[in-house]
Image 1 (tube, rainbow, N blue to C red):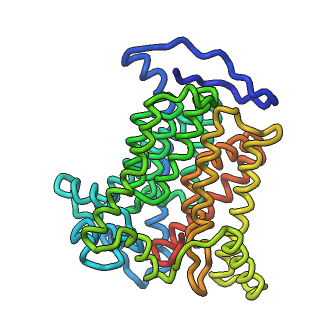
Image 2 (tube, helix red, strand yellow; image 1 turned 90 degrees about the horizontal axis):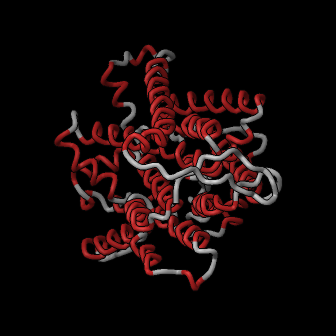
Image 3 (tube, rainbow, N blue to C red; image 1 turned 90 degrees about the vertical axis):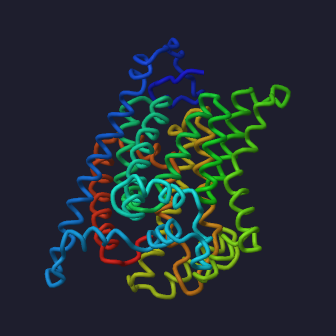
Length: 409
């Protein structure tokens, strides 16, 4: 199967343009990948420059703090970053809450720390930045093979420009998971089942959501085999590799702590108990808004934003499969992955007396179809300008909020 860049097709039949001739060799590969590499690279550079500028100006309202280069740099060292650096330096036995954070990212921090400048924190930043670059390149590539270069460039920009897009370049595992997931999804489309499953296995060692890559694996495999069980071959067994990252981590937790589900039980330290159906989570969010209306205090505002985002995502996912905006049939596996990815936080444990969806708009970064659909809407000049102005303004505020040690997502 070859990569095929085609123009958007809004017909009911979803017909494809004929595939391009197969091209081989390094030069041919570079011709195929050049638009994706350049789009990802310049989007990445623009993002890093914007974050550097925002970091500098975020301290102007508080001159009494007399910030220095080092204090500003250390401002990025907060929240989950503290946990990843602790695990990288001291391991999981340092604190019983550590198992809540999956091992691949801190393991990479520990492995690269001796060869990268600075300590584990700096290693984490460099790793996240490089993973963000890969994620942006793969976002363009995965979109372009279905919908063409112009829309792919817009989807790539929309991803990083989203209010929580800066989480892709801080010392969190966000960009690593996105890079692994998009790369795995790309290989699924190419029919490279072994590579797709191996990358999915690494993703499942990065965060629980990595296991969800099994869903698009099954759908895309069946689609490429005409939805016929009789055409299933032994290469379908590669799907068993996808959850191995989680399985190996559970074995480690069982041998080290006597509890293979320690990663889930550790969530109780943050008052998160068990899982809830999505309607319970949404009902709780509505109840908090109703009880505190018309207050726009922090918790109420977070719930209003989360409710708006949930319904917005529901609309975009519906448009992706129905009506004149629906995506091509061969993109169904991407829509399915985005759906289950967004469903997971809706079913997550609800914190007592806290906003039930505090991290939803960060996890939204992992749903590629959301940004593909936004990019299609962005073909309208007015929508593109409004979206760009709103999300970039919000991201600037979110970066400043994060740098001043307030919770964002």
